[in-house]
Image (tube, rainbow, N blue to C red; front, side):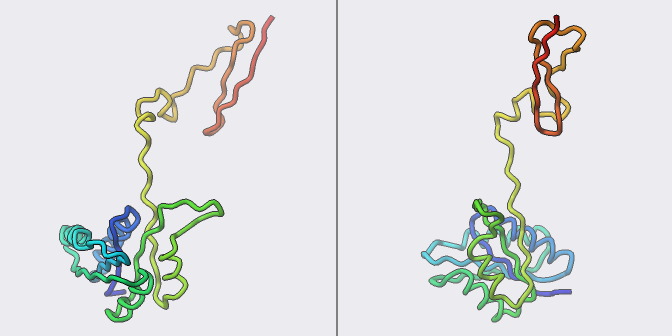
Length: 175
């Protein structure tokens, strides 16, 4: 089993998902975690580290935090992983969408390209449904408008059928 896990963190949802995943893996493997926060622009990273270190403590996982400033994040992650002796890297998947297909994020992509270590990528946090969906009468898979009986159909009555998630309509004219 791996005993040293480095998790790259910042204040984004994907990075916090990576921190949660690193804590889960560390707990199951009895490993320690180094949370590394990197900023190129002088951002205060201490609140982020306090938060993730608190999460690790809640789960009885041994963890430390480190910050790096003034270099591209992927370079800092690789250098710190080497310096600390990490055996696994955990990173978040970018929450940006890419029109050409899946997109992990530029820093994660660079780490995947240049790291000799295994890299575990935490999935993008699942989006919560919009509030208007909660109040919609169509939120349940079993809720759908009643389908009229063709025998009772009147001129130009509309029938609806459900096919998976798609809805189809056809006009029925009876005489």
